[in-house]
Image (tube, rainbow, N blue to C red):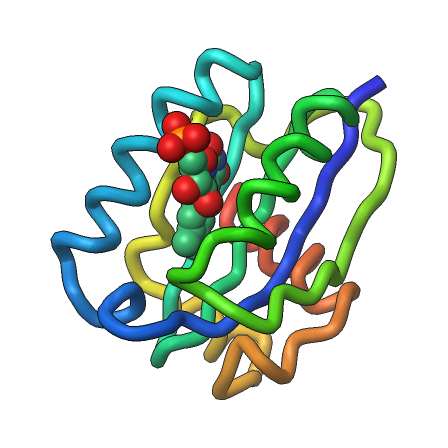
Length: 128
Ligand SMILES: Cc1cc2nc3c(=O)[nH]c(=O)nc-3n(C[C@H](O)[C@H](O)[C@H](O)COP(=O)(O)O)c2cc1C
């Protein structure tokens, strides 16, 4: 059984700003997620982080434990945790290239204001 977990958090230090730090996260995540059959997408906007992850429960739980312990972000809040029939994310890890435009489409200025329903709509928009 597959699950989808979507969480929001706040970047600490350079995570939200430096291309290098984001590239480091993407590099490690890509390798681990491929190994664990996890697919994911990361959005970073003005220091706020939103990440959607799909995979088997045991793999997601293990990843969430690593994420909660990661000092590069804080205040991790799970917005969505649901069983899914099929994946909407197909790459081990992707970075949302234009978060401002996506947020504009749902008329929200900031990731921190997103509800569970908003993030599902965002996933639909991303897939469209
Ligand atoms: C915003 C953010 C997103 C991350 N996403 C993932 C991810 O999708 N997969 C992953 O394995 N690690 C991810 N990480 C890194 C993990 O928190 C952790 O550092 C890493 O998995 C540990 O790998 P290691 O045990 O090989 O050192 C992310 C970190 C941050 C700050």
